[in-house]
Amino acid sequence: MNNWGDEVIDFAAACDPSNTVEVTGVKNPRSFSKEELQAMEQVDFVNHISCATNGPGGVLTSNVPMTGVPMSAIVEQCGGLEDGIDTVLVSAYDGWDCAAPFTAESYIDDAYIVTKMYGEDLTDDWGPIMVVSRGLCGAMNVKHAKTIEFSQTSQPLPPSMLGKTPRSFEIHRMNGAWFQNDGVTVKVGETTTLTGAAYSFYKVSGGIEQLSFSFDMGQTWTDFKIADTIKDYDAGQWINWSIDWTPQKAGTYIVKVDGIDGEGNHMENPVSLVVVVEE
Image 1 (cartoon, rainbow, N blue to C red):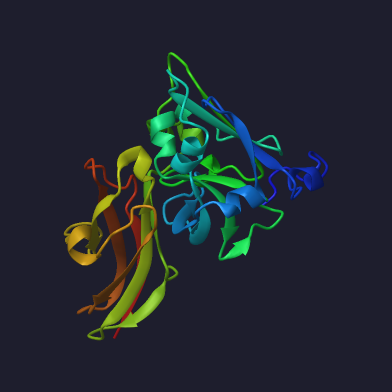
Image 2: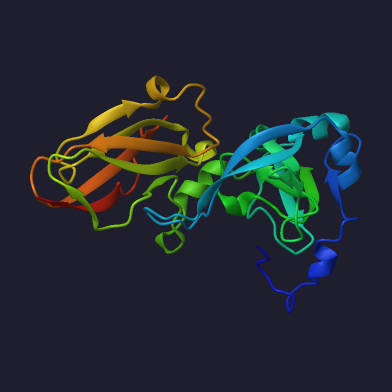
């Protein structure tokens, strides 16, 4: 979406199809047009985009099919990084940037210059060129990309900064949501299927290694190792789950889901669902 509005920026200029993205801090600095990028070898992938301010159980999240050129291929086209480079900052024609410099090595890994989503050229709200870094929150992606500046600094800011924001701008590094609404009604003795999704910003704290479910307000948990249940798990996408439950007693239940990432961190707030069980 357009964050600023036409009264703040020249939106037509920001999404001009002739705009190029300039790469600096490399041995052969150059600009790439959309046509030049699309003439390079393309990679199709699915990228999870989630808002940095998505609260527990929030649904501001999506898996999006994208097509683009790996940042590693772009750097190679430019002859590699200049000596001593350790930081990268990406900015846009609409004045946005990726919020802070990142370590160049970390950013290049799993970053792409994207020109298509869902198999179609980017719309004006996104393009013509977008820079995406998988494993980070949506705000770190840069629409209407203008510059990719590799540079040298004595104190680069690592991606882990995302997990250390003040409570006024909370970022949940691992989160999830139920696809049912609170108050969903089921019957005693009948098996019901509950569904939802979970994701992590894997460049901040690692991919999800385990999901756990509780049907007694967190008193006991049933654990599922991701490696045992999902073949070729891609940490850059959300996980869809489906779990069967057969309640044996009427009442109101708080069903919870928790996750554990590769560093042993739990969700800050296990996501709850209110389920009403009737006779």
